[in-house]
Image (cartoon, rainbow, N blue to C red; front, top):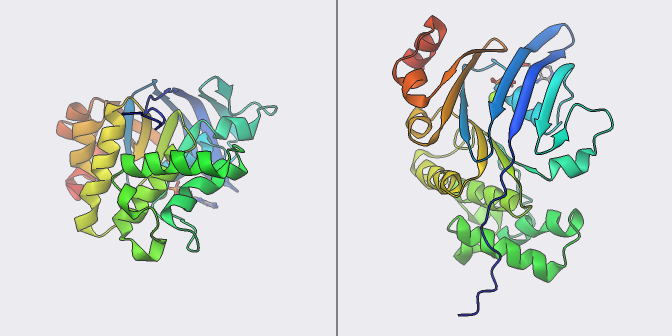
Length: 253
Ligand code: ADP
Ligand code: MG
């Protein structure tokens, strides 16, 4: 068979966050976060609502401007004022709780549009890459469907395929299954599990403790803008050391 599909080889980048601080007005939301994700590693970020998890992720691809500290992503210093933000962001794929697909574009074109606009790929090349990534998330057969013809889980898988189509070296997930009907959560988690197996670097905010336990190399528990506890999943989720971690897990498990 003549294999014309692009490879799934992942070029994974690491993230190195040091003493990151972020305030909104007088409200300091991140109070000196240090966190490393090595290339190919999966880190799950857990913690109560309002603890700063989304803000942290948004700082990593500069959707928010940190006040202090440093963030290194795949050879870029995100916090350097001279950083080429567009170039750096291309290394980072982000998947949100809300999928934010374009309602007027089918699944294929949702995956293609940033490739043609940002990466300047031809439409044919972009569509080929899109189809490959839709197949990767199990949706090759639904490429011509529009978002309102897809379930929430399917839309989220399109959003993942869209992110992958930009060839990211790091994927950030912010509660990717929190808005989904329970019966569609499993398919999304299974796509993420496969991505982890392929060696993608992943930083995942999630309340899916079973997923974290199974897939994460490390789990980081945040509360009140600080990292309270981190370690291998078995330790942080299975036998947490800190009272705040115990209290949180008692509520979510
Ligand atoms: P989490 O994702 O852990 O629930 P967030 O990072 O969303 O937490 O929010 C942390 C804190 O920062 C909350 O108190 C929230 O109200 C505040 N916050 C988040 N985004 C903004 C913003 N754009 N402007 C002002 N405050 C914000
Ligand atoms: Mg959040």
